[in-house]
Image (tube, rainbow, N blue to C red):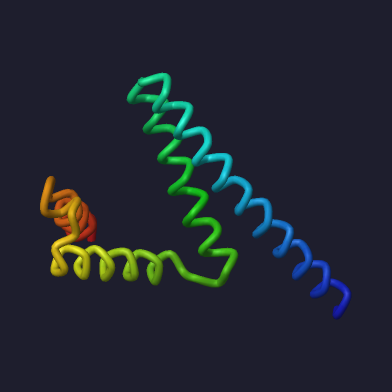
Length: 103
């Protein structure tokens, strides 16, 4: 039983390391997609990054609901503090509204 637990822990550590490299690879893929200039390839790269981030959070013991609560909290905080992206485009409040509507 202890050996199985040790194997699970080692597997989880390897998975976390792999997901970290996936994040880096995903950012690289996004930059390449932006160079190609196609919206479809950028959307694919961004969706991959989001999936990897959620998966990494879960492997780190952070439930999806808690991650999303932190995202929403951070969005509210940035809106209240007048983050430049919010002031210029209103993107953060639009994303906060999107989260709200999905509930």
